[in-house]
Length: 182
Length: 182
DNA sequence: GTCTATACATCGATAGAC
DNA sequence: GTCTATCGATGTATAGAC
Image 1 (cartoon, chains in turn purple, orange, blue, yellow):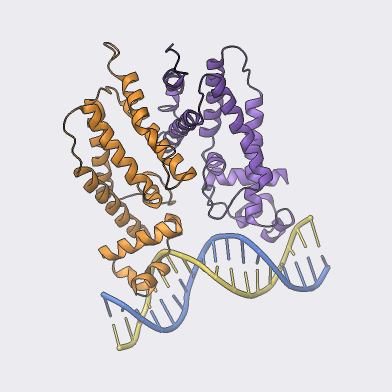
Image 2 (cartoon, rainbow over the protein chains, first blue to last red):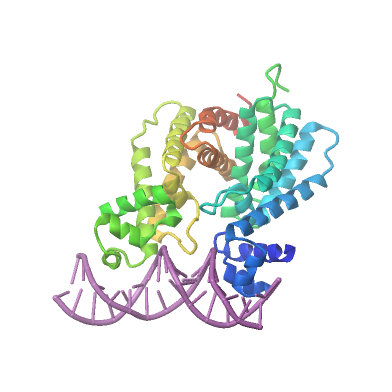
């Protein structure tokens, strides 16, 4: 079961998340295609299992971080880990953070895990000075833009992601509470 | 021919760029599916015609702008027009600026038009103080991030795009030539 | 140029034997 | 739980008559 999901990720990496087929997956795990229905009620159920698994991987990664000390530094450590996670597997990034499968919506249970990740990011950003939801929204969008540009235009490189820290500083400087600029 | 492409855009808006089928397109224009091969050698050729057409639409829009006066203001006017163009038709945005069709690459001729758009943006940003390719790259990525967040999470709204001007100012302030901060 | 007919492939899903 | 067999839908593309 877990190994089927792992193999599904391999195929998704190779052929894109949308190019994943049950025939190919069955062949890869040494089964016939109908036998997969013992484990998943439908293809969407497989995607849902992958969605949950991907978020589990991400949470595991984020839980291992040391986020003590300066809170701006904590944001940077967190975002670096997040960005690395995203760019190292474009297919996974697509399933977790975009809506590439027409008709697929994660189950409530799976979606809950995804919300945990987001709320941790929000807490860190708040602690680092981003007060409003608006400022958090735009920061998240900016980072997602970096990730997508990196994946699309320079896969495996760092032409965009290497500027993450600098952009984070810029953003936190700009939107820190209005009392006084640093 | 042009009307077939226009109808193809309608279907793409309704069912997604990847959900466009030649059967449906033929039915919509009052033909049988094989008859489309009179106009396009393959489905990819249709996508290529759409790609070229979308870039033509964009260039037309950008050519109508008044970009005189202050160069920072010119950047804002340009980027506002670009962002509006992108969010008003997510399917078109997908075909023009992402790679949603496995195996489809625009022809050299079509791609050339896309490069014209980019080079205009680059010229404006350079004139407004962004010296390095790196700074331009990140700015473009940030704007693309805003667009994607807007389309994905608040289609038809402006929760993200309304901050475009503010982010543009922030970015140009940060990366203007190092002589002195404004 | 447009049609009918069809080839050919892929896919998800189900029925029923073992 | 796994299999064989098959259904039914969808999709692109081609052959050949008109």
